[in-house]
Image (tube, rainbow, N blue to C red; front, side, top):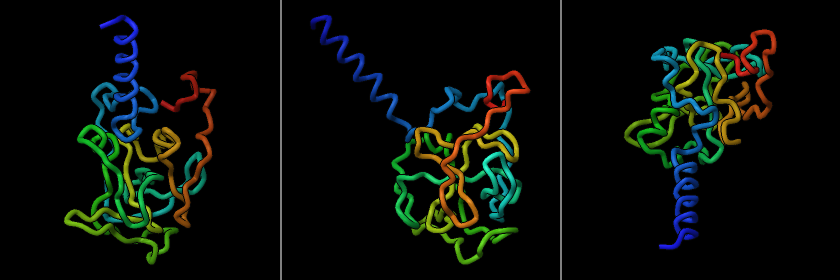
Length: 171
């Protein structure tokens, strides 16, 4: 095999690996964060809480919820392997309406393992959100976003925090 064919094959492999995993590797951290566990999930409630992005959808423990822009209405269309599901776990079941949300906008996807939806958007967590209020999944690959009280994707960027000398990433 010629050197140029090997180079092209190498680039193709790198590109394929980059696109695998449903767009989940935005910050280069695969969820290891020094062994710290992600914030606990309380799937019993969906509510609104204040964040650097404004008022956004969170679960009962304050953990941020995200939508995947490629999902169909009330349908989990994401083709996700085990690594992707570990990074973007779905909010399962049908939660109750908490503060600031419309109960009529809460629903589930159809199927054997119903996933919580809000305004028709299946809801997901981001594994690298380590504490209540973290929004580290915001805007990853321009397909993952937090939601507002109306169930609309909030597409603004997370403001940098220059006073903590960490490059503006908030951790």
